[in-house]
Structures are given as structure tokens and as C-alpha cells.
Length: 345
Ligand code: MLT
Image 1 (tube, helix red, strand yellow):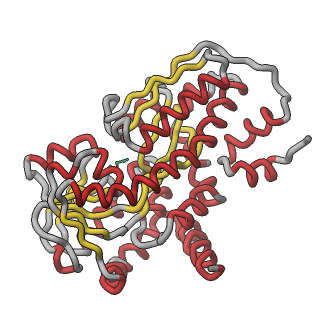
Image 2 (image 1 turned 120 degrees about the horizontal axis):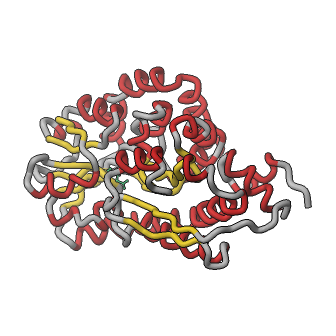
Image 3 (image 1 turned 60 degrees about the horizontal axis):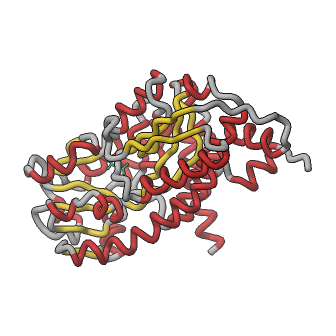
């Protein structure tokens, strides 16, 4: 069967460059051309996290598809460095692959920041439709210029606030909380707008900063709060779901360009085939983690919708400013896509 690139993209949901490779493979146009290779794959979360388990699943698929020739070595818990250090290593070609938050990519490709705008997504499906569709493809198409290949988006999830000071149940409760945020201007500005005192910091330093009370709080999806044992150093969890964070699987372009088309196809297929597995795991972990975190002693506060709306209204000027700075038309496309999905419900 001959597949057009557009048909293949629609069926597999893979990103543009990756789809061309998948198409070649799907048509059997190439002979298997696979070398023995070791792929160093880094990530910031522990091996037990949904992304860690995703990488393990990916590694098994790659090994199987390459007849045992391509092996993936897992480096979890930021042992190869925090996200930005790994991005630099990928660019330099000293590390082959990573999965990490897109929020730290804004220094290299500012347009990724549209995904960080607060209170845009309400459900995982809204976020998946955006990152797996044309918007995600337009964003990842910018990565080769900075030495990276974006293969497919996995899930990090909806972010919630933790702190050691007080139960945050309303906007005013955030006042003065010294809060670690990702190294991303949107998070910095919107938490300032909400009254907190945000401090940008790499993820690899967060546990110690919370433990030593260098900062009062931080924010992350519940599954991360659980697998990173943040409950050991934080008392209060507030279910703010203020932003959705995607995880993007990336490869070093320098390294990618040395691979045969078959090898690129094997990796691409394995990342894309792992995506539903990783997202399912992450979604299940998200709801289970909230109950687990209660059991582990955290006070969990649900924020009423009206209060979340107040927070969202308060940060609206930040959303407007950054949407215009990053890419006004892409941001509009994202808002319209989400609005259209809600209308269909
Ligand atoms: C962070 O807070 O830096 C990230 O959410 C960590 C991650 O990528 O899981």
C-alpha cells in the first residue's frame, strides 16, 4: 500500500520529520541498515516515574526492532545533568537522547513558551490534540536549527502547588511564598502576578532546596510530587492545575544525522509507540498519586472552580503579553483549537 505523508501523519500522529522516515519504513523502501549502537538516554525524574518507565519501554522496543543491535542505556534522576544541561549535550552531540519538560526549551526556541501559558488546557485530551497536531509540528520543526530533533510529545501533566507554609486555598494565600519555578519566564511572571516570590531553579536542585527551606514551595504534577518524594519535605499540596506540562522526547541532531534511515525509523517508531503507554501510565499515576500523597501525610486542598477562575483572571495580562511575544498567530491557533474542542463537547 502506498501511503502519502499526510495520511501517515494523520494515522500515526508523529511529527513531520519523523513521519517522512516512518513513511519510508512503512513502504519497505529501504533495506535494513542497522549498526550496533549504544544510545545514552537521560531524564530528570527517577526510573520509577511514568517518563522513566516510558524510556524503559522505549528501550525494549528499540532493542526488539533492531534485532538486539541498538541498545538504550537509561540515565534517570538527572545523573547526566538537569534538562538544560542535557539539551546542551544533545546539541554538542555528547549525549544521544533525552526526555524532559518543554518549558526549559524557551531559551533556545521561544515559541515553545505558548505551551506554558497558564490555565489554557483543562483536560489531557486538549493538550494532546495541540501537541500532537499541527501546532506541535510547527514547534518541533524549529528544533533542528538549534541542533535538536523533536520526535514526539509524551506526558508530564497538570501542575499543582506544594509548600511548607500553609494550605493554599485561595489567591491571597500565595502571598509571599518563596516558590521554585522552572527556568521559564512565563512561570516566573505568572507566579509574581499571583503574589508569590518565584525563584527559577533546575529540577535537579529542588528537593534539597525544599528540604533546607531555601524555598518554601514548588509546583509539579502529582505523579512527580510522589515519585520524587516531595512529600518528605512539603506539607501542603493545592490542586491548582494551573498549567499543563508536556514532556518532549528529543535526539541530538549531530548524532541523528549519522544514523541510517532504518535506524532513525526504528527510534521514531519506538518513541511514537511508547506514547500511549507512557500517557496512560501518567494519567493513572496522577489520580493514584493524590490519594497516595494524602496517605503519606500531605494536606491536600481542592481549589473551588470560582477561585481558579480568579487566579486565571489575575494572570490574563501575563498570558496576553507572552502570547504576543512568543508567536501571536500560533498562540491564537492554540486558543482556537482548544475553544473548538470545547464547543464540540
Ligand atoms: C520541573 O519541575 O522541572 C519538571 O516538571 C520536572 C520534570 O520534567 O518532570
